[in-house]
Length: 558
Image (cartoon, rainbow, N blue to C red):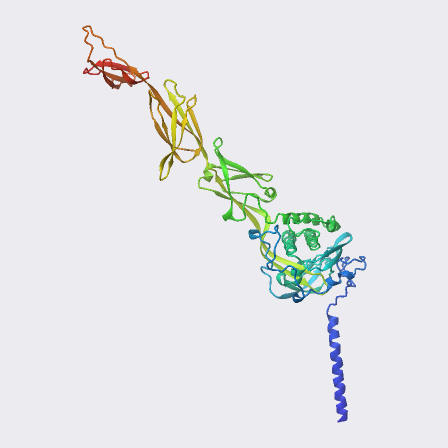
């Protein structure tokens, strides 16, 4: 009995000892943040396995003491007090709002956390690594007030399960083949507290226009240069070397110069292009709109000499020359720098305005999904996937109120054409004719009335001078583009006086028939002109080369 009790106590003691060793075994299996670089590099790699972010010599990279706060795991949400809440933030005036609102975070991000394995580009074969000219030290402060120091002289690109990822924590080093935990941007404590809303927006633009979303080159070396340019721009924004608000001005070029002119030439061209696209983000020609229903109208002026409607507009935003080529049905458009020359025949615009459109280089992100990846003792990285369509710009082309000119020409058989008045009236639907004004002929018998309306009906009435007869005193006309001409003809009225004599002196009370000849050789063209008595002059006979014959009253004509 005593022996059995002793045996049971021994077994219990062994069990207690075994249970005490289990946590130690588990701790050995988990990665421990020692602040030291990995002991050995991949067999085929000549680049360091730990990114050059330490302030020590390249051969013995170590995490400096002042960076220790950044090597700890992200602060839990309940322990951190964000300076800028993720919702309801007040954006600066140069961050687009409304139609140009900031890129929406996590439109399609998965909820909750996932895990993924992070690898480094230099693990491929040691070739894909950016060697800087030297290690440079940068001091900066995160949005939550945490001071940080980054020592950057080399750079690799990270991948999460093969998907490109960018470092957003440059003061912390990284290792390859490490398991990370990923959360959506809106749920990430680091993303929401370490970076301001403006920094997040600026980084979003870098990712939108950087690799691989915008560049996507089939050549690995070229694309790798673009990836490096994307990473440097993100670091510039995180460390305050570049403004996080438009136009995203760079205040310190040292980081760029560290990697410029290296083994991957596309780094330099990609860097410049990404900045250019960021600055032009959602920028369209100043005379256009991003939406068809708000497209402004551009009126073309009609030129009667060419029969064309034309005008020119200038883009004060400066993106027309490089980004936009507008087209519209029946309309010709050519660019001269940032000036757009527009022309069209009147027939192309007779049914109203015509929509013009163009597709630019700027991207309008519809769905953006950010994943922020963290691991103990490792730098935080971000991946992004987005559905983005090119931004379009619209305006409408219409014919301006096409001017029509009315010309009134006055003629008279005695040459008296000056100073004769005409009244102009315009036909108004539902009202009738409304008087516009009275005009007087010049010394040449002309009146020019400019800038009337094409397609409108007008009425012109002459005030016929005393002693004249108008062939037509009033005329109507519907104006066509250009000059429209109406001619008015007057005839001078003269008196015909008949003197009667007789050998017996009987001359009173005798009637005469006066006929006017309108033909040339046919007497049946004679028509009665007047019936008068002697000494009664005919006062209103036209001054023309007409023949008259006079018969005694009652005698047959012919």
